[in-house]
Amino acid sequence: MKLNYDNKKIEIIIPKTVPRYKEDVLKFLYQHDVDWIIEHEKKGTFNSDQNNVEQIPVKTIGIWMSGGADSSLLAYLLTKKIKDENLDVLLQPLSVRRIPKTWNVLYATNVVDFIKDQLKVDNILDLKSYWPSLDDDYQANFKEFVDRDHENFSKNLLQVMYSGITSNPPKGELDEESTQTNRDDGQGTILIKDDWPLRTYYNPFAKINKKTLAKIYDDFGLLETLFPITRSCEGFEQDTKNYTVHCEKCWWCKERFWAFGRYI
Image (cartoon, rainbow, N blue to C red; front, side, top):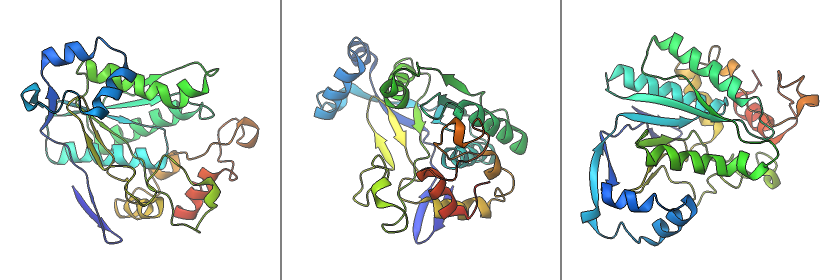
């Protein structure tokens, strides 16, 4: 699936195979914790020897879903691609109950149900959710994703992981001090494809911002169907009527309104 918006090409890719370390190397690696593996992976300790690597078939792909507009659209497009091209691939949605996004599992579940009903498919599995302690902000907002990726890839439950992360709005469009540092900064910080012999990630929206995303929603007829059931807000309970409406004050709400001209 190839899209072209604002002179940028967006390609939704599901590879047939991905590179992976051979079984003996994987067994050695997964004796260690995830931090040790990542440290040595960055050094290229093992992938320098191509004899350690083989191609494995892609049977199940995963996507981290927050219930927000970005990951929801990507899940829809991936499911549509699988259906339209009759691919022998399953899509496994995953979600983490985060801080302050304690509502995101519910919204992500609603999106998955919508996709199943809208596209009349059975190739998207039920949402798998993780519930780290809300007393540990680091675990709930970062480490849980790393740990679960480690678990799912080590057991070969998934061969590719997708994220709907988008780039920041152009400088000056929103409060620059609140620019999201884990997004693309215009210098290629977030890769569209991050392919290790240990695991494979795709971020198809990494070089486009949410305003471009709104055009894709419109072109696929999803502005009045999928978009209203998504949620992009980090407001707390008192500002959101117990997480049922957007707070309209946080950076994420401002970005949503900047892109779509509305909250729902």
